[in-house]
Amino acid sequence: MITDEQFSVAWENEDNRKIMQSAIRRYRGIIPADEMNSCKMIGLWESLKGYDKSKGRKFTTYLYCGILMQCRKRINRFKYITIDDVAPYMDLNKMNLDAEMTREKVRDSVDKLDAD
Image (cartoon, rainbow, N blue to C red; front, side, top):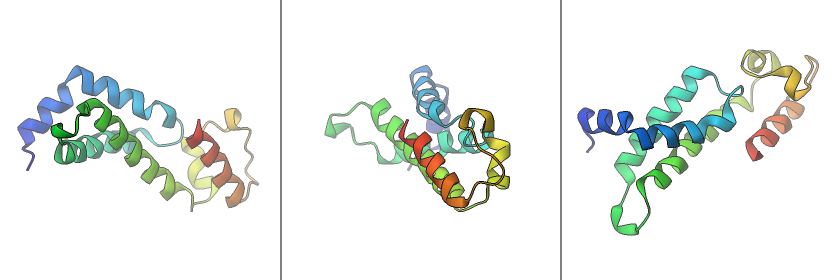
C-alpha cells in the first residue's frame, strides 16, 4: 500500500515530474488542464502501486506508460460527446473543425491526435 508521504515524495521528484509533463504534452488542447492533472496523479498512484523493480524496467518508463493510459481513458470518454462539449478544450483552428461536424468526424480527429 502506498502512503500519502510516499506519493508526495514521488510527486515532487524532478525526474517523475519531467516524465509526467512529457507524457501529457501530446494531449494539451484535447484534455482540460484539471483532467490532465488527474491523469498525472492517478497515473503516478497506479504506477507506484504496480511497479515491480525485479522486472528490470526503470520506474520512469513504467510511469510514462501509466500516464499515457490515463490520458487515453479520458480521450475515450470524449469520443461519445458532441463537438459543442469538446470545443472549449480544443484548438479548432489548428484542427480545422467547424460546428457542423458529426460525432464520427470528431472521433476520427481525436484518434488522429492520439496517434501523433
